[in-house]
Amino acid sequence: MPKTFEDKEMLPLPIAAVTVAEWCPNPDRENPTQVHLIIELEEADFSMALRFKGTRSLDKIINALIESRRRVFPAAAKIGEDKA
Image 1: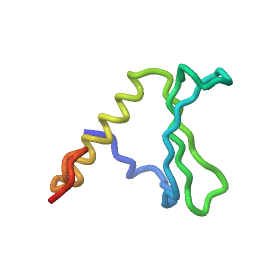
Image 2: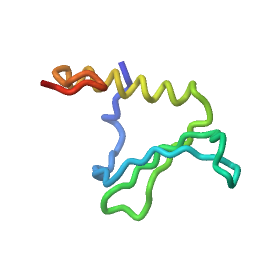
Image 3: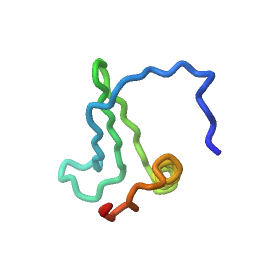
């Protein structure tokens, strides 16, 4: 079970946009080496970015999101399927 954040002060900022981008150190943009998850917040002067430099950390967040989705929204269609 994930840790709770009941003892932490949370800022209820709605998400304005989420962008996933590949990053490449070369100007030709071939052979990207990182995945960036950029979260833009409404009513905030900043965006948050998470850099994933390897598959292990990226897989951890993907799996955690999938597991939470299953627990919170059990009636939702499976990922990649339309709900009839």
